Length: 344
Image (cartoon, rainbow, N blue to C red; front, side):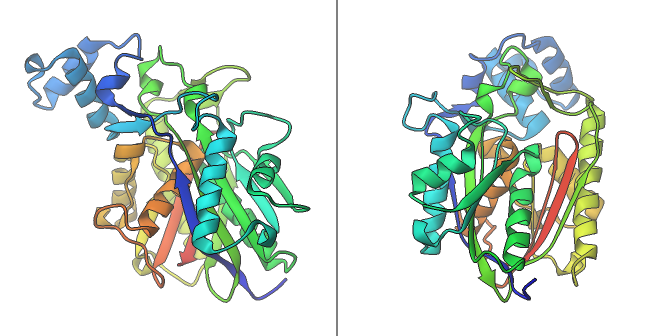
């Protein structure tokens, strides 16, 4: 075991070109009960009678989730179609930023539950697409904590002293497994990929925490089927508690406390969940990265995409620079809990 840690030296992300606003999504979603939305919005003082059905749908989604638009793949035959292509584009950008060629990558860790192919696996496909030869890799599936867990694996591999430079990619095309006849799930999910190149260094990742907690009341993806939500309000409370627990447990493994953290990047599940997490941790919302309004919930790639956008300064008022201390935290279906502290 080496004394070195893993430092993120480059990030990248890729989103399908097709942008779908809430009002446009209305044309794709069936079984939307406008009466329920009208009653809910009326209680919040919204003049629902002045809204068209599309405007009502838009306002309901924004109030419930914080989402205004999302990126959706146009299908596997399009230029931004399949999961492997999104992963490749994000990986290519991260490698360019890092100044690393394919011949310098020692290993690929990929996170996804929506690959185009089961075999060859996603890590194998990514290695092939970037032109890497004679390297190892594997795919993990921990749903919405995928990127954090993949980073955690890369962190331990580098600390082992066996690896120098590792490519981490998280990608989902959730539109492939979203039931658009169910508005409660259809409004949430989106497509996208994020990536990071990590390399052995004197500073970088400080600590990592991961936990499994089996429950069938969260998101379930049955083989060959659609994503199904369960649990209702219980899911939101449990998600907040899980992300808080993961964050605090990870901090306990580090030399830092909450007050030492400059930025928090949570899984982009729902804006209300992020606000409730900030309240539970006693931190100002200004420290929390919020991208769900423009990208939706992209599951395991959401933290990766948010990190990349924050590092590049593409989120207004939120720019992660070298020397800043960052806390990643997430919860995924299963449940999975993961968190990471980084001296960026």
